[in-house]
Length: 383
Image (tube, rainbow, N blue to C red):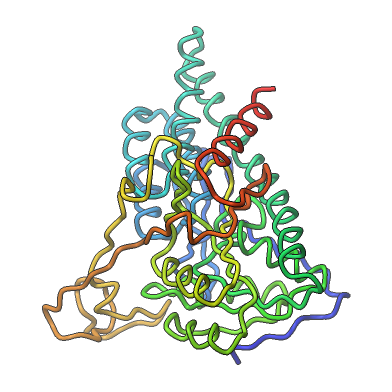
């Protein structure tokens, strides 16, 4: 069944999923990832021993989601340093593995800067590697803390916009523990509402073509005992028309200086629908996702994914005899069909009701308000 009803309050099992962790077995340090391409069929871990393995995991979406990409990038630099690889080369490869997600480059830069600073102070390679690892671990902790604060701010906002509870929330892509050092961004808000008894229904867009909603958000919602229903992306309009959506909650891969939001492709149409139907459209993202160096949405480099993700269908862990060579899936379009497959689209700030960060809520969304939140975050970090 697509519809899973909430468990009783006695269900105290942990719902957080460990999507990434650093381990130090006798044979040497490794970065362990939960392979998200294999979910929900099975939980399989990838063990990365060098940056190149991690770069491939990032490009294949085995590890994904803006905050987690930042954490992974930082750990990747530390991994190269600890294992004696070329740190500069690893940092360059990691930072450019996926161009749209600003957190990836930020995480790489943070660990790389710590490594370089240690060397500049006269430290040896071991001390520099320790500094890079400490920076990655600190970023991991900060993201978990930010996740908890975003959830708190988000639930407060929902209660202000939608007094009385019984929220019916539509979400797109995947924004839970699988993308975070904590319980996520937009999903963390929905989860907090669920725990408070104020979530009536989580509507889960399947999120084509790679089905991050169907495979990952439904997986997380089921583990958390949330009442959820899966729908095809193009069924969202009928939900709005029926008056069955109270709010839209999404994450972000990059927020520009003017408040434009790059998120998984399909987000922008939801914003248009939400505006027409007078439904709040809320973005939940840490301050690290705000990129003041990118002035507006038109300046964002949107990642173009391979066409076979659209022209073929791949089921997790299902062997396919005679599958198309390009992607290993079952062809659903004529041979030679060209596919338009942007990974993201961009929603302009005028369609965004609010941006929820760990430092508070930005509404209305303006360049000045975003700059103030970023400045507040810097004061907290350096204070």
